[in-house]
Image (cartoon, rainbow, N blue to C red; front, side, top):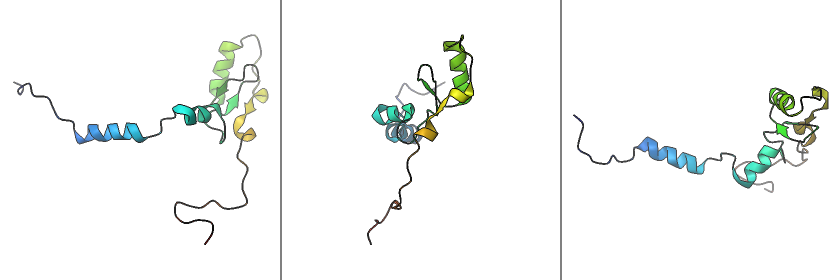
Length: 105
């Protein structure tokens, strides 16, 4: 026999999961679009299709895309554009400050 039909209160684990889901960056929004498209730091999109300019994170995914969308054109890895090499951030001469402190002391 179960207990009376009283509603259960939220557990600490459930509350912590809600807080974590609300505060963790899941890659959505404007910042997520830039990350997925390969802007700034390269993002998740490493390779770009030379035919339709769609991006993929790895060679296997790009090959699957190519086989399904461009079946009449032969697949050549040498023609793929590596966005991480093209859009890599330029190293600055000044060191960036850490969490505390600043560059001027």
